[in-house]
Image 1 (tube, rainbow, N blue to C red):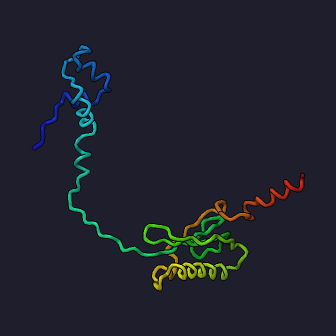
Image 2 (cartoon, helix red, strand yellow):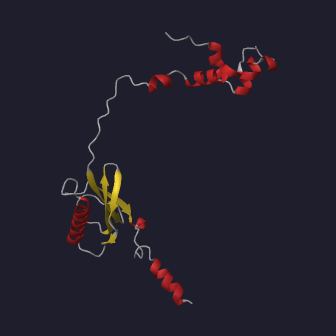
Length: 179
């Protein structure tokens, strides 16, 4: 059984250090129970309570079961507005990223696909999977059959330069023409 809590110390923990010293330090005219070597930690204990320590200790034994390391591919698309399934939104650019477990391994170079018809965009997405498989597949097709998920990014985040959306190439030609 644990030690009983001291009501006086608990009440002291609710005060600021300056107020507590005035009430309890004999040098400042207080009750004389202030002890520098004990009071700071005791006040902290009462402020935080025993609840933190009890919550930190698991009530049941935890068993960690390791997850097998698998490869998966994430498709990154850059679109003007969020795309819903079976939606005919034009994809501005795309790339694929290979992960092994919780570490990124490879990223294909982002490419503009906004001028391509939808069937060619789908074919290009398959080509990205095949390219990653040929480079990192190790004769195992697992993880390269399809994309694990698709991450949609705003067209404003397109990493490709020059880009028709950002039009940096137009600004530089206008500046050169004015010289």
